[in-house]
Length: 362
View 1: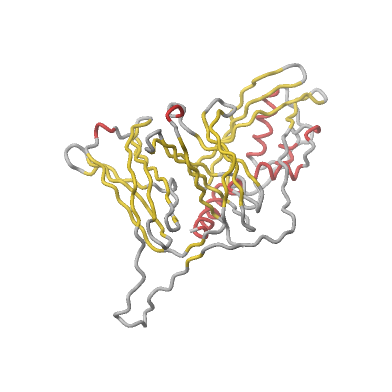
View 2: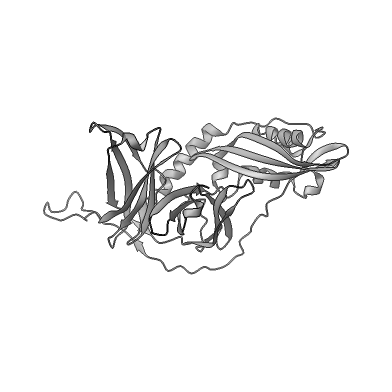
């Protein structure tokens, strides 16, 4: 599955990122802090890196190459398959010499829209406003030997020349554990959990068909990426199926659909989830934060975090997901953040985080 997604990411990138660079002036001038931020990202959106970098304050201590990598991504991460779509800015504080500008960045990616909110410090240098860019620290993994000892399942299928009576490998046994239908933001959402009950790995898809009061099927959707499709033996995954524009009162029944099949799989790489907590982000929204730790010796290019939230009775009340735009280097913690609805935060008793991972072929 990782190979297929890598091809999709690569193909979509061609359509997202325009080729070519326009050389900008090194004497860029901005008369307002907000204008400096807008001009910097405007040039970056057009791939005019000279022009964009000209709005970076000299006190930032970041070279142009590092600045470009901060914006375009590293190590085959999701950011490398993205294109800056729009920038919204708002001045939070301003004096004669410095200001703070809240910047909301919207990226078009191969897996949908991605948002990044930053509070940027803007300072006045030589009479012009410049952005004090918070350079990302580039991680260099030291040479080391990382022992691996993980389970792996390979499959030998019946060949074309085998005896007609030879039995093929059976598909795994899986089960939908729960289903909860709720109405949110003018649409119907079906969520719950599914388990691989077998001793072999399974590729799982879950969907739902809605029937109206007249007994007619009116809508059908699948969980798409709001699920861990590959489940090792005894693993449990959340799922969420969205039906925009459908009211719960218009639905008489929900018919769950599913498909599971045997696939080769391994338990590597192992990704640990550390320091989980629910808190407010800089915009005041409720989020689940933590760190991901890639315990293997290979790079995970695109981590996908799934969070399941339960009430005090153990019922699934929300499923949320987020793609990290930073790759997971071996043995290097990387922060993550997953949104939680503000109106549900008080009802959350426990939560569980699982991580999908996609790696490009070397």
